[in-house]
Image (cartoon, rainbow, N blue to C red):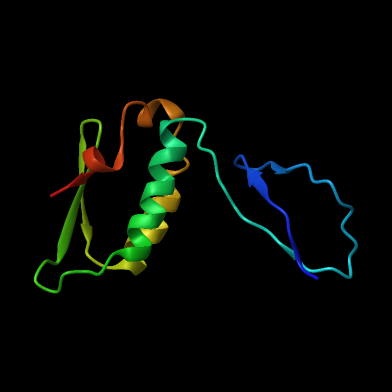
Length: 108
């Protein structure tokens, strides 16, 4: 019998939800990830991951624009370029992302 147990992650922490039954290693356990963003930066990067996963580059456009505070970035329109750039952006401090969401960040 396979039991389903849930846990949620809070960016670096993992918490199991309480259950009635003991789980033995021989039983299968299915985990569900339910990240809970703590701030605007976490929410923005969760949305960017979802956006990048579903993104299909337009072959007619060679660049895509992003805006963060006063800076505008013209990035090459390829997932291979965008993913590492998003990772580097995560190193910026929280103050840079306060009040920003994905609609403001991606310039149409």
